[in-house]
Image: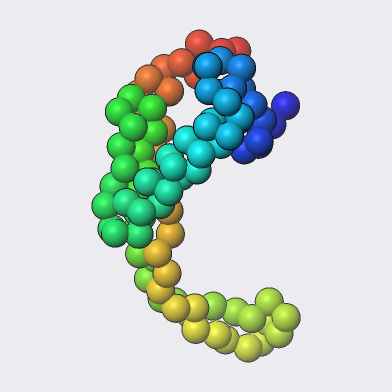
Length: 96
């Protein structure tokens, strides 16, 4: 089963004494904090669990998929980089 944002919020409500509205605001606040850090060019590290960073993918020449004989310029863009922490990696190693 995939866990979407609403299911995640529902699980927070089940496991805490937060109301649905409080849990939703908490999740949105966490998203906002991480996004603000990345936009500012900083790294967000949730020690042992996950780290979020961003990097610049350099501009490059590419091929127009609708017209394969036509070359196009793909400009540089900032992309997310997500790395699993050691606790997360170790926890998943035990699953078979």
